[in-house]
Structure formats: C-alpha cells, structure tokens
Amino acid sequence: MASISVPRLLARGAVRPLCRPRPCCPRPQFQRAFLSSKHPSGFVPPAVEDLEELRERAQEFTRREIPEDVAAHTDRTNAFPNEMWRKLGDAGFLGITADEEYGGLAMGYQAHCVIMEEISRASGSIGLSYAAHSQLCVNQLMLNGSPDQKLRFLPGLVAGEKVGALAMSEHSAGSDVVSMKTTAKKVDGGFLLNGTKMWITNGPDADYIIVYAKTTPDAGSKGITAFIVDTKTKGFSCARKLDKLGMRGSNTGEIVLEDVFVPAENVLGAVDRGVRVLMEGLDLERLVLSAGPIGIMQASLDLALPYTHTRTQFSIPLAHNQLMQAKLADMHVALSSARAYTLSVAAAIDRHHEAIAADDWLIPTQDCAGAILFAAERATLCALDAVQCLGGMGYVNEIPAGRLLRDAKLYEIGAGTSEVRRIVIGRAFNRLYK
Image (cartoon, rainbow, N blue to C red):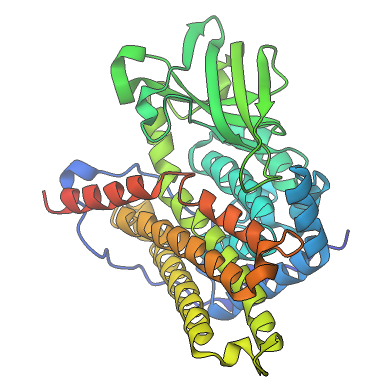
C-alpha cells in the first residue's frame, strides 16, 4: 500500500528553536509530578503549516482506506477490518508520539488529536480502536516503559504488526478503578494474574495488553501494579466479544485471566505504583480521545449541509428555512468551539514540553477533562441535529446519521463518564485553591 509522506515537521532544521517557557502557575507542593517527559526525544512543537499538511495527509488516507462503504460495513458486521492495522502503521499514524528509533514520528499531542479527529470523521469505530492502540497502549509504553520494554514491544505496535490495548475496568470497578478485584501474586520469576476485565477496547484482537492488577490488595491505590501481558500466554482468554449499541466494529471484550504468568521484566513502572502509571497518561488520554467526538461532529455536518441545501420543500431548499439555519449554526459553533478547545490545550502541552519534563509546568487536568466533556456532549447533540435535518432519511440505516448518533454517545460514557469528568474538574479546582 502506498504510504503518505511525512510532514515537514520532521525536518528539524526548518523549525525555529524553542524558547524555554515559563510555567503558567507554580505547582503546589502536594502535587509533585512524576519527573518524566511526556514527549518524544528531540521533540519540537509543530508549526501551523505542519499540522495543516498532516491533516491533509490524514484526509487522503481516510478517503482512500476508510470510505463510507468500509465504515458502514464495519458497523453492520460489528467487526474491525484487521488489515487496517498495517495500513495505519504504514501511514505512520500508530506511532505519532513514539520515538523515531522505534519507528514512530516523534510528534506531539496536537498531531495526535488531528489524526484522531480525521479517522473518527471517517469511522467512529475505527477511530476508537485507533486511540486504544496508539494512545492507551503505545503512548503508555513510551511514558513508562523501560528501554528494554520499548525495544521489545514498540516496533511491532508502531508498525501495525501487533495490536495493543489497555485493561483497567471491571464489572464492579468502572469509574471506581481502585476497587478492582484482579490480583497479581508474586511467584518465582514474576507474577500470576487472576481476574476479569470488562469493556476492553481491542480486547478480542490484542497481542499485548497493559493490565492493572492488585499486588497488595489491602493497600488501596498504593497496591496496584501495571503489567504488559502477552495474550498468547496460557490462562489468558477473551470470554466474549460485546454486542454494543454503537462503536460497532471497535471490537470490545471481556477478558479473563486465570493464573496468567507475567515475567518480572514485563512490570510496567514499579510494583505497587500502577496508579502512577495510570496518572502519567490519564490527562493525555482524555485530551486525545476528545478529538474523537470532534470528528463525529464534523461528519454530522458533512451529512447535514449538502442535504439541507439540495433537499427542497415548499419550493425552497431546507437550508433557507430559518429554523434549519439555526440548527446548522448551532452544529457549526459546537464543532468549532470543541476543536478550538482541544487543540488549544494540546498546543499548550506541546509548547511547554520542556517545562513539563522539568516539573515546572502542570498539565491542566481541568482542561483535559473539560475538552472531552464538552466535545462528547456536543457530539451527541450534533448527531441528533443531523438526524433531524435529514428527517425521514436520517432515521433509515442506509444513511449514516443513526450510526453517528450511536457512536457519539459512547464518548459520554467511556474513558470516564460525563459525571466523573465534572467531578475531576471540580477536584482540580479544589487542589489549586487548597
């Protein structure tokens, strides 16, 4: 398959040297961050033209590889097109934030959001699986993996030869992750994992899964450890693939671990410090995922605008009706506001990459949660408006309006519900004013 060209961003000499940014606010003493970079080695923030070029390349990819018939088939059959992984890898999209030495593009979170938006615009299902692989798995390994772990796992994941996932949630531990029941018992040479994980995106297909389990069950949040699990290991199984309302084709499963042996060298981070691993990527996960509903909003407008300008009633196009104009205007404003919010937060994080690594700048938890909260809720409303704009045609399955609505709703539930995101924002304010 023909691969897309790499943006000019990788021509390092063409980018102006970065001045060391000043922290936006002092970091509270009780909130000492984990001293690690959140960006690839040698990272330079992208210029506007670099991001525009990257968006054009992503649009070329989706027009070629994820046309409407592929998106519809993915939804209808509830099956991810597995050949897509190698295509995404060949395009360079699976390693946006990974170092070049592992095959990545060594770009930042603005770039990741742009790619996530454009893939989700073509197919919400493929976009969600893409994010679970590239952000929840690949980026977690980049942030927390040892040099040996990165060398062993990242090249295959970045190339699309292997599929990645993250397993944290359980039947009784969704938003309340610390109440998880999965355990990891220390044995000679490693750990034995036992338990179940629920709602795991890419679970049925994954080769490697980052699994959270309790190594010291009585220690609460200080007794959880992250493990890199090879799904070919004896005792690992996917009990069932879930039949979901939306995001069909983003294969999601229930994972069972029965005395799954994980060698000590596959502990991600330190033993009993899994919450640290989790928190390293949680804000960034919310930020990148917020681009998913933005893509769905754009897809909703892609449907509604041409239809309302060609469909006539009472001898005029629907879009010449003021009530319809109000809906289209609201959709446009919601999309533009959400995109601006997400990209401004991503730009700030990219711009302050040196200060973040030096522990001089705090990634704004309230804005990472706020970006996905705003985008997710507006995406559902935009998809509803798209259905309404198309009228009867919006309610039949031969038109993707219904799929967009079903896909959009996931973002108000997955990766933290809207209610939890509001709590996260409130608690972030409480910490700042303690």
